[in-house]
Image (cartoon, rainbow, N blue to C red):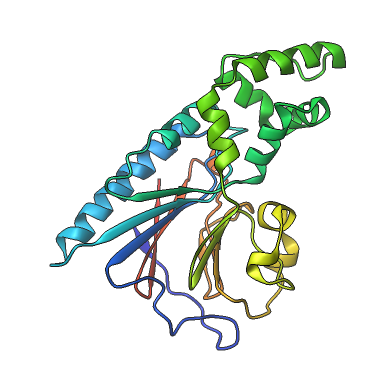
Length: 258
């Protein structure tokens, strides 16, 4: 685990406030993109860390883990990732799974032929393979439609229910968990999925003070970041083999990586 010393700016961060209650540890996990192998490794590290954290205190310590979306596409085992998240035991850590833009597109593709064709060009082919469905994205539209209908019928009901139930954000002031980021010009809870799931440069380049510290993924970066304004956790796991999590306790932020 690496500790990260954040850069401070009096105008843009909430550094003087504890980020969690004294008796709670919060973990956040970045974009998984079909890498069940990395998810298994990171979960093992997180559970070991939480056990060690509980052993260091004399009072009950609560734990929470927030997954920031983009569980599917590009990597080899999206089906396995969703199955893992659906079956996670929440007796030790409360589990919150947020929606990413790839989950939104996958869900829409189950019923929409044009979205299905576009999805195949952005990681859907690998996701279908993980469910045992081989599709040629370059075949004729009528044949693609047959494949879409077949996949939609075979898609596990439990997995569809999981996708349909995913919230777009999790508010735990002063932390605000979301997949992509937020529009700095709108109140945090008055935004829509175009902001929560897709925003990029308008959020990353803006330096306006925000209502909360934003914990997010979506935009791959070389290293996880914590600058007093946002915690960014996407390091392109599907091609870098590095899935990152953040541990937040009190005023401290630490990174856990595969």
